[in-house]
Length: 337
Image (cartoon, rainbow, N blue to C red):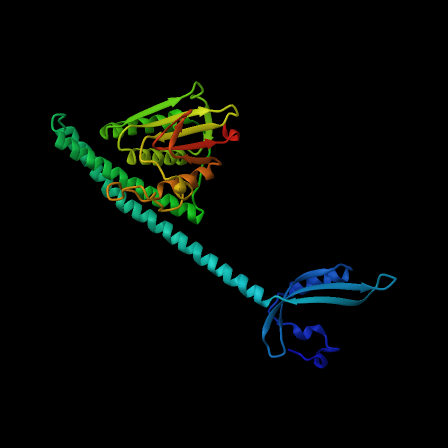
């Protein structure tokens, strides 16, 4: 840069880089001439032609008659800060582009996988109608296995896509007034009651007198939450029951409990169970399939619905404790109509 002797007495214009728009200087001098302080960023040039950014504040100094007799300038070199900001901006843009490509890829892969799986499911159902015989247990088992495996593939795809959307910030919720029991729980109970019976389990559903009360929620998200919870409850329960209870508390908050008499979760692992891909150490992975995404996805979606999720293990219904797990979802008062 310029030495002290070289700079003294020189007009500050020697620092102009020629890279700033003229209107920046016009606005700057207009404000200073009116007696006001101007602050802004300028791209200036050193003696050797190197460009650098400055944060500049220029204050007019006036005499007793209000005439501007001098200017006081305070400058700070912000070149490194600008470079770092540019690096961060470029990194953010690359990350956003990467997320966009990932979402597009997952959406395409979802379509490519769903189409043949849905075809398999449809043909299986047609064959089941033509050849189903209650006395043929082997054939019945084959059709049920095809149905179960196909639906599991589709739900796993949905979980992966939902988690990718949440991580990229593109997961959207659409709040509207719905009857929670009729729209969410009744269809799921009907579907999972059959699955539970095939595994020798009992699915119990209880709701209080206010079960017809409406709530403002995102229907798709709520369905995903309780689909995952029922999947887990049945998956990790070898014998006994699964219980779903919906009730409104004294503060008009909706509480939904999904309890089971399954293998439970070790107490010291409950806080970890919401981590992506985490599976409790007591799960016999050789025998029970699972991605480890279900509960982490439940937590993420519940939070986007302004709700809370809590897990207790052993399960507790009233004052009774028994082996298993209870997941409690609570939706806030301000979302009730």
